[in-house]
Length: 477
Image (cartoon, rainbow, N blue to C red):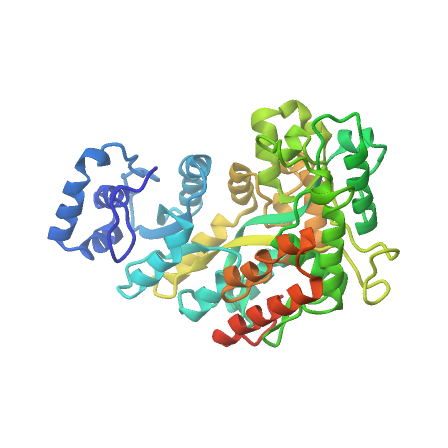
């Protein structure tokens, strides 16, 4: 749904205002939130958007009829990711929560990631925000520093279900030794391969080492019988760089406020990425004059891709479902010890970098105990499975796997890797700028116009300056 009207303080759209006006029929909380805007301001913005507001779909999560007896209204704010997820919440998850907690009426508001936490923080000043809100894999830093969420350590310690969550998902909720959320969604990264194309170049199994992966690039570039094939693997990305670094060195990318990339492990990581990308010729044998249309794996432009499951699976389901049987879920390769060597023998291990979203109980909620019960109920295995399936993501609890969606598309293998090698993605203040220091130099390193040592020195200087500017001195792992 396109944005129609923006309210200056909170970033609400015209559709948001219609939703709030609708909910005033049954929600005292909504009447309070609407009163933050003056009547004159509301009428001015609503009138200016009148021709477009008719196109808004009014969010009617749970209907407007209250159950009998004393009911507590709980507002939950989630990141809006697709219409299917909204429908699953409206038709399955909200009714299930209200059936299991008859004393609760649950309202859901869907927000954009880029304004989500700012809206939470703005309404916290008026104690009018949600009782529960979602935050992303690196947002726990902002949540803690802005004092937005209740510490949950005492509650999770008394919850027998807490140990059922995958360890890297639990770690994503922790900052400064304090737990601020309950994991809700999970996107592990690994390598996906086209098994049929590997067979065509004479490779019978997915590679497990950096050396084998480079060799696949050479074979792909020299193969005459694959008209569409141009690349062995994807251009290296920042997330992949951080995964490879952690796998070869077995340590975080930031320690005591200083980046660790300018090191022997960092040099070996970039050397491998450059060798892989240039195997068989510049760009991994790519013919850049004929870029692929759509997914490179679907088109056969690549044999392998570092990615999460949704980014790989959705193009296959939408345009080439007959090729799904050719998709293999591989373990992230590690140095094989011949050309690429770990700093200590036996130290290298695959790293499945994991991006986790979580649910927090708002610090200013006037009903934190009930909000906690709702958060736990939302994190029930069956409801997590339904939510994850709507987005093709991985359930964050072991007991939510081994059934339904998680038995399809190689997902069982991905769950195995998550449990065995999963690591929470690095949570670093100014994380976007931290990654940009790598991204801006990576293409030059790959093409050979920037020396690896010089690139790492520049990255180190830029990243350490960023970390010092926010006073970050702890480990990010």
